Image (cartoon, rainbow, N blue to C red; front, side, top):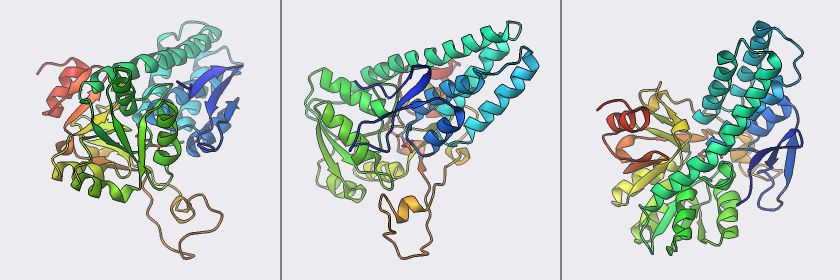
Length: 349
Ligand code: MRU
């Protein structure tokens, strides 16, 4: 598996995902501003990968601070984390990682600043190592839902490129392949930025998986023709009641799957859950540049000049349409509010 993000040569090394599938180009990010833009431009993307980028980004932002005083250090740390948190609003993992790194500083406040910096770096590395394990666990649970001979529909990119090196929804698919199951994956191209065709088709092909690319508006026909056995998608943020935000178009697939009586699964790590939000109505949805719709990757607009655009990057699938949520702690089925609390937070039924 490729490594999407790591710490190398004193910098954050990422695959520049805007260049795929034409070029496999690596970037070495050495300062906070460049990291912020890499996140905003989606050179690095996908909820778990954004968590790692945020954690390493904090280290980039504080490593050269000269202060030896904890309260000054804390002010700087706060401004670094606030800055990173403005890069993209929806993926819970980004905020989860920032909170985790900040709590390391607070817990170790009586230690020298030099030590706190080292501990922050160590925590970011821990997040990287954990992501690899968590994704493989999601793969193990998810694979159980995939029968030999299945045709699976997916959207966006939830694979190695969205995590450190394996994937969530695609992790289940990789695991099924490792277990010798014969599977076929239909990939929605995922307008407007084409993560499906540029990234998912690229990584699935690279891993020898039978992959068929479709445009997003073909999903209904495929289901009507009986070509889809199950749908698996990822998530950027899951509310306490199971409502799940993911790439725009995921909700369409859930509605279609329900109508056609096809199971619809969400795969995501615990770090994607936001227990502070009661329902999906509260999930912040990123609005992106209209040019992504009008220009796509062309220099000239493919719409008449001045056309108004609505470009939300994510939608929310109501929990009622989700057959099960696959996490590293097991498969969660309805009733979600109760079962999420029980499975992920260990709180009584
Ligand atoms: O805008 P993107 O490409 O960052 O959106 C990514 C997705 O919607 C993924 O499905 C989600 O982050 C889960 S990745 C394991």
